[in-house]
Length: 195
Image 1: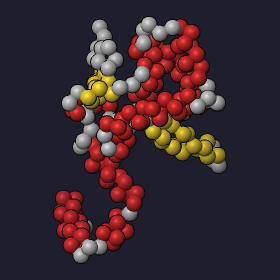
Image 2: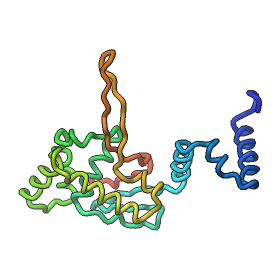
Image 3: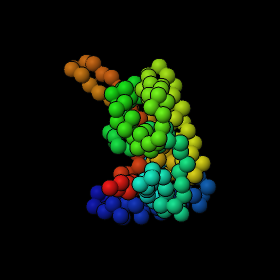
Image 4: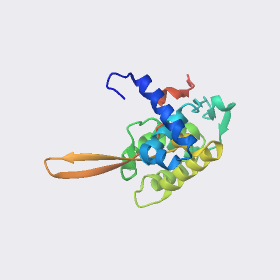
């Protein structure tokens, strides 16, 4: 390899070298050369080609448009949680969910307009209480629904997953934000207008 090669030429050479290792039955060396983190990144990149548009209809049905309009069957509370995280691509820490209570209420009322007011508030109490496991249960249910519809790598774009971000404060204080995010590229999300 020379520094004069284009990225395309490098990719062609890499393909040739990988083919040689595969022909010799040395996938162990290929894996060692690539490394597991890169392999995981490549699997996620490959999943991007199989991503479907997520259409949220006026009546709050969630449809995977490119998978034959398959309906993502979620209860209203799950849809409200999903809409909250979808509207915050920067992520939200579970321990700070109480800061988003009004927004979560708004989503919940939109997806379940006839919900009993007391039931709504009780549900919000559970979801926004950092000592309650309700939010984890809702995210687990969302994950199961998407995982039942597609392979794990594709589903990883649709679920509410962890993202740890390192923060620095001053010269020697470090802390980590444990954000929860939906990594689905937002250009694949289509929300039908309710006007």
